[in-house]
Amino acid sequence: MNIEEYFTRISYKGSLEKLDFGTLAAIFQHHIRAVPFENLSIHCGETITLDLDHVYNKIVKEKRGGWCMENNQLLSWVLKKLGYNTTILGAYVYNPQQNTYATQMTHLIIKVVIDERAYIVDAGFGVSYQMWQPLELVSGKDQPQMPGIFRFTEDNGIWYYEKIRRKQYIPSQNFANSDLLEKRERRSIYLFSLEPRTVEDFRFQCSYLQTSPDSVFTKKSICSLQTNDGFRALIGWTLVETKFNHTEGTDLVKHTTLSDDEVEKTLREKFGITLENKLVPINIKATYTI
Image (cartoon, rainbow, N blue to C red):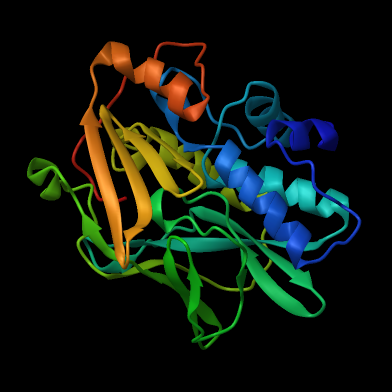
């Protein structure tokens, strides 16, 4: 594994002299705009593994994306190799339909400490909930970014992460009622503690999420990539393109329904992904909002 090859993959040509927040944020922003959040392996006959060399080959050499356990594991390796003080943490994702948090720790995130300040780094959530910069780990502080306002709240050692979004303008009234769209202004995302974790703590969850019929990842083929002014996502045959703050206080959300032939073409042209195996798109109704 070659860190310079990773920087070529994300088109990062900035300075690495200072291990400060500016360098961290710059690397992070290049990563989320180059490496999609995606689960396509599940739907084209591949197995997702957590071996770092496999993750590296998939994302860097094959120019694919991955879910949180792949994206954030690779990013953690990069940051640690540069000399950042990093710790892997585990999070429990919020289920809006059940109004509760998952009972299994399924989301891998990173804590980075710079000059005695801690930041949460998460390049593996995708869609509108994807942070655009590392977030300072402080309780009760609004942290506005282009996607919206993010906030952590701490209670007895448990940290709750949420986002407040803008209003949405949806030109297609047919899509306005889609179950893919989040209707609430304030949305819980996940909770976590500061207990250090390792990749080994996620191996069971990695297997479960890609095999269980109850997993949202087996019910939906998902690919999401952040852009300079928003994000795009392909869920099954539905392409969603969002522009943040299109007009003051309002995000523009457009959608297109694709044919089977258009799906792989769109993956190549809009997400930079070329699959070796045939993708079988899927979008069964499940708790997943963008």
